[in-house]
Structure formats: C-alpha cells, structure tokens
Image (cartoon, rainbow, N blue to C red; front, side, top):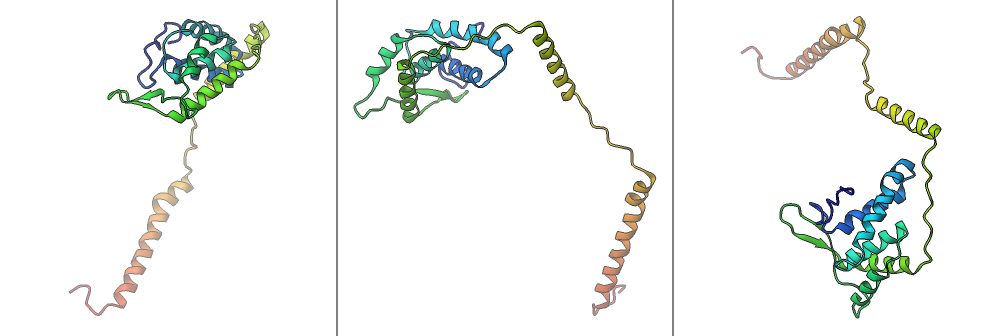
Length: 202
C-alpha cells in the first residue's frame, strides 16, 4: 500500500492519505524493530514529502505536519496554510478522519482537529530532532532475527496433546458417576413420594 501509493484517495474507512501516513509514523515511533524501520522508514519519508503543498483540510494538514516532524522533514508550506485556518475562538474547523465504508458518511471532531493542529504547530516550531540513523543489521544480528522469527513460527504451530484417559478415569466417568447420580435420584424420588398423599402407581 505504501509502495504503490494505494492510500492517495484515502482508504475504505479513513478519509485522507494523511491518516494512513500519520498512523504508520506512530507505528514506527512505537516500534524498536530495526527491520521494520529499515523497510518502511525511508519510504515513509519519501511519500510524506510528496504530499507537501497539496490541498487538505485542517486535520489533514496537521497530520501531515506531525508526520513530517517525525521523519525529519521541514514543512513551512503547510504550516503557513494551517495557521490562517484558526477561528476567532481559537479552534480549527472540523476535519474528516473516518468514514463509513458503505454509506460514505464522514466523521470528524472539531476538538480533535484543534488538538492535532496545536501539536503540529508545536512540532514545527521545535528544533528539529535528528532521527537516529539505524544501521543495517550485521550478519550476526540477521542470524538472531532469523532465529527469533523461526522460534515464533514454531510457537504458533504448537499443538497441545491431551493425555489418553486411564481405565480408572473411564470407569469413573461412564460407570461410577452415572450410577451414583441414579441412586441419588432414586433417594430423592423416594423422599418426595413418602411425603405425598397420592398413590404413585394409581
């Protein structure tokens, strides 16, 4: 999806391409996987750069700016677009983040847009933090990654085998337990009938 730009018209449930890129940036930010960063990091930066200067509502611009801040891109162009969108009450107009897949009903929240816009302005006005350069894994690290992946696959394919029941368990389940329950039922029935005023065999 990232490679072929399949997100440019939004997705079935998310309204804008910025939504996709923003949440992908959050995924990378929360992940310590060197492999994931090497695979997606450079491409995310390239795809984010392609959107700079394109049209978008306040929420889309804010998400774009936050993604730029994460990947280390300067984006004064979209910042200059976002700032005049602020209303007299200090907030920003509603931006669309979600939509119903079949009905195409758009969903947004003005409070969310305002919060994201403030964070985006703060991120762009902060000194740019240099993203840590992730070196390619060494052959030893690649071997460790392969071992962990293999071990995880084996864990997923584990099947628990229950021990076969012993003769004692079988007798208890199919003979002793039913017989005990039958006797208890007879005793209960006998107790009930002894207190009844009618002949049960009438």
